Length: 114
Length: 111
Image (cartoon, rainbow over all chains, first blue to last red; front, side, top):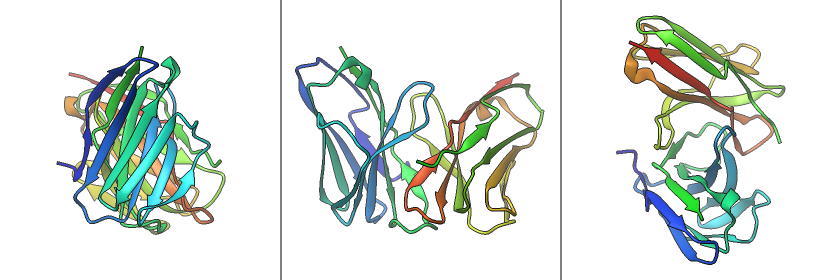
């Protein structure tokens, strides 16, 4: 139990579908993150939220749309994705954005775009 | 953005052997974190380091925050098959607020 829960664990979607990934943290943290992990690439930061406010968008295409209704929940809305968007999408949370903080990850959603 | 150079990229060892991996950067870091990722799972935090020169252990794992604040090392002693996975270093730069990750070290342990 990591304290950060992601659903679904696996998702297969067509390029014209709309789907959402969900992340929930039970750690009382204020910051939440979306990362993309593709094969043989470093973890890529996508979005950062702190106290529900988006503080960073790392040049992510608009077909990925994040939503953070409160400090405990984070969504990633997906629409008209491309096959190259297939990857493991990881959510993480931390106490804040301080430089001495630690980030804890969920188990990830394995996304396949067909 | 800042990249961390993690090496080696992969290691194949026999059970019982010790393992060392490291991470370097061109800028100074305030925090170094080491994670392990099992296949199909998210990274799990192993060790966190906050001070230059700090040496911290977690069971058979030992990590050090380099004295120059530009590197960190992770050692695993007496490896066992369940040590298999990808090990990532990560850190916060002094001048930044983003957690940067290394490319990972894929560890394979042969029984």
